[in-house]
Image 1 (tube, rainbow, N blue to C red):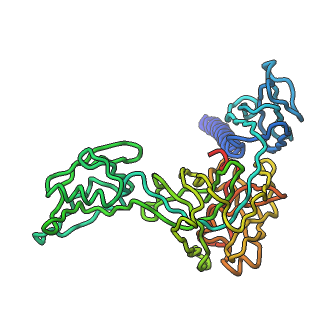
Image 2 (cartoon, one colour; image 1 turned 60 degrees about the vertical axis):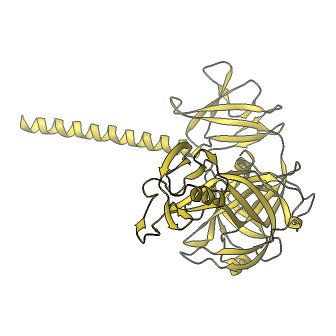
Image 3 (cartoon, rainbow, N blue to C red; image 1 turned 180 degrees about the horizontal axis):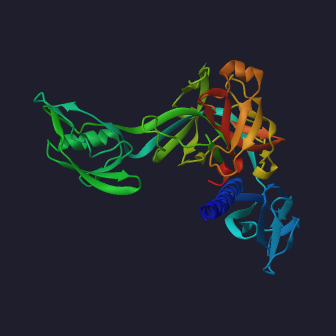
Length: 426
């Protein structure tokens, strides 16, 4: 009897292990397919968009307004078409609009809805030239807090555990302050009486009461480090036929907090490469640029700071870029692993450098393209990708497909890029 119970127990354990194993397989299959299928795809109006996900899943798409070619078969609902996502298919529409594909695993388990956007054919001018970026913060950015020595010789920390790095001071005692000078003036006017700061913290507006510390006869301080503007050099990615542009492929972030800057007004200027620090393992290189803040070197405005780049209006075409040198854009489904180029002016001359695209992540916001620099000249000059090259356009098969965004700290020859459609749909 004891032996029989042992055999039954072993059989039960084997069945349990098999069931658990099947659950793990199902879970990982689901997670892999969910990640591999794009959240959103674009097709150009009047043109076929060709897709082949090579995934063991199905999709259902409505027939109205969207033509489907390839492996379709009737779905459960008469007004829908069923797709085998392990086979190639094409989508086409004659009208701009939004559609969706409902994706399922084994035809049973819902994975995700893929947004399908039908857009007008788009062309842009790829730039790849350095630009000077100057922006004012929307509010006064708090970098940190610290200790101050009062006029009595004692040390104080009036902002400790109240203000935080990344806060934005918007008002003092209900009055708007636009810059550091305004904040200093209001604090000095307090004559040591408590002040109420209106602070924006992670999208929430709060009020904090601080006690200024007297440091001299007419000077009072709060013990905070602040910033109200930023300046730097980046790369202009493209401009369009309506006077708009996109640059960087990632946000302007504060060097100390590492956070995207809440931006007020900003200006774009011409810039020149003044020097290059070559990238080495563990130490990313950078471009040193010269910006001349004079009206004759002004290129335009900076109006938006987003996770996929900065945007604004150009008042004139940047130097070294042809006025009518328009390229079509390449959508995600048109891209392929293999040879491509980036446009950069790191040498002082605007030219294309060879890279190889090694992988793609369709759902990454600004690291969807993984590539390696293969151009001997660029490797000799910079070691690969260095800070300041963010925004350099990526070209493949005569189309603008993306822009450089990040470098591998441990290997400057490798970098990430953003899909151009992500920049265009900001």
